[in-house]
Length: 278
Image 1 (cartoon, helix red, strand yellow):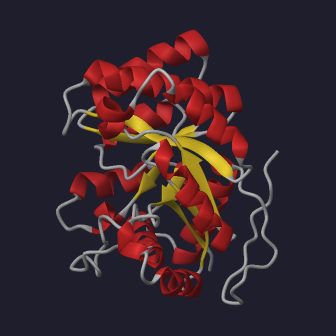
Image 2 (cartoon, helix red, strand yellow):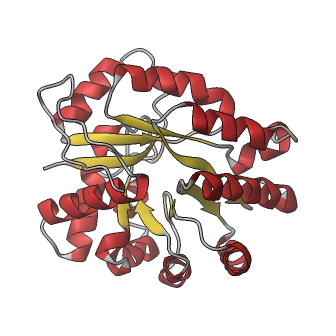
């Protein structure tokens, strides 16, 4: 069984001391590819260095909405564009989006998000979208942009929306990615959403080191190997075999992020069967 963790932050300090052991565990768990999100362009060099160590890692570049107020400048779009073009392992722009839960600079976030959408459109890359307490305004705004400029491919990452909100973003063409939240007993709306997403739009992730899934919820640090628990829960909710869920979400990740083939990884514990998507 092969799995792809479509959203990780293993560049953070909590992984510095034992990243090789973490990698051993993700390979042992069948995680054959990872997509590393980017919170701000300053992270890019460090993420690229990690990808040099682990060939199964692809990555993104972008600016998180909660960092827009302090870090978004007139030069930011050109910097993100330059970095995205600098390495063929860049498979997405992001994470970008809107967060109205922790910040009130709504218009500034929209402007930064729209600029990053434009970069994704220019480079024909998908976007990794963060959306918190902003589903309705985001969906309405994106519908307007799609009508004026055409759609951009992407994923609603770490999705925690209701089935109605999920439907809005499916209609906009997005993939929906579920994290450890879907394993929480209280997350009934998220679980209903996980049941309704079409099989060809479904992704899984850890968003590590955050949001450890059940049965690891008591652990302060989440890690890529725990994506297996997300997969198990989504398979249960959809009443399908785990192997089927793993195969479908792996195929979907390869399609969305145009992941290249890796014939042999450094570890004999895993191999990747993704084919490059034209």
